Amino acid sequence: MDRIFIHGGRPLRGTVKIGGSKNSALPILAATLLTRGKCTISRVPDLSDIHYMLTILSTLGCEVERASGIVRVCAQKICTQALYDTVRKMRASICIIGPLLGREGEATVSLPGGCVIGDRPIDLHLRGFEKLGTAIRMQGGNIKALAPRLKGNTIFLRGKHGSTVLGTDNVMMAAALADGITVIEGAAEEPEVVDLASFLVKMGACIEGAGTSRIVIEGVKELYGAEHEIIPDRIEAGTFLVAAAICGEGVTVQHVAPQHLQSVTETLRKTGLRIEIGTNSITLHKRGKSQPLKVDAKPHPGFPTDMQAQMCALLSTTEGLSTVTDHIFPRRFMHLAELKRMGANIELEGATATIRGVPILGAAPVMASDLRASAALILAGLQAEGITEVHRVYHIDRGYERIDEKFNGLGAHIERVKTSSLR
Ligand code: EPZ
Image (cartoon, rainbow, N blue to C red; front, side, top):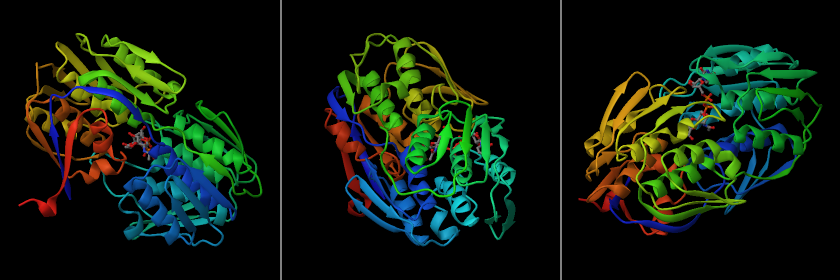
């Protein structure tokens, strides 16, 4: 397991190119199961979560080729079982059930494991499948789903924490090959759902309303191979923008879709930062005196929960009293204990962190716990006095491609060390 050492206090300046979206690529790769044709997906980021998904597709019988950012998949002949050892590493593997049901009428997939960001139920996914005529039963830790013929229906897909992104994806993929019309009420509106819908339409699906809370899918008999370029990763872009807010002196994120980041740029503007929006770039100028904030992480178009930890790092050294509430994952605060080890003054009450800004954080050895918490620790290390050592960096490699190299390209000093070489 690698560690990274962040030499704090260095200003960031320059331009960083943002990669393709992990959270768009994962369901789109799963969607290639819906056709016997050849699919070519470009701008696929080089991440361990993507590697897991490609392994799952290969295990199911797909021919998978990867050449740098381009992935070719052909699901000519597939099996419908993905058991524990294959899927246990990544919750997002749940989004193969919808395509397997649509294509083969059955799926046996291991129940996703636990997750440090909180409870990750799949009741809404299963409700959606059942409404399409699927018989679901649990056996030996596996979900066994059987649907000789999927039938379109109207499905309300919202839980107590709002809509479900992968649940919307899963139902949309199954409904694409169902008999008749499916209406998803309370659908997730995230840009990644829109990207999946546009790929499915290229495959021959009839889908309207993606990006709104009501998606209408008219089932077709067959779907065909297609080509698609993944949208930019708005969370990677947002992470670099928050880093620029912390210690930037003119940072531009390039190859982005600014319209996907509106809630993030508006929130950063509220702290008093000057932000210039280009066609596919965003520039954030040197941080003046920041204002404290009240941040509420909500379903899109609200502030993204995947940016909540990064905001906690920024607000830790923003003078005054700020609050950060996560309405999606109320327990997604593993990063707070580590930020407090670096001197942050944060109290957690239920799903709300109250942060009293301190002048500066101090370096300390810290432990990454999940993908976005690790990003927050790197942002904290960039501004801390001294050298911050982050353990379990594999968490960050799940969702950020070469993040240390990209930050060093902006003037940071981050060293990645293989633990085998450490005493
Ligand atoms: C997607 O997860 C993202 N992952 C997550 O990003 C992101 O945090 C999340 O959406 C919310 O935006 C991918 O796209 C691969 P949900 P997903 O279903 O779809 C509850 C990252 O860091 N819920 O939208 O699994 C759930 O507990 C990852 O990149 C149910 O109650 O999340 C949560 O409170 C982390 N029942 C809320 O809904 C269900 O059946 C939203 O979860 C499903 C979800």
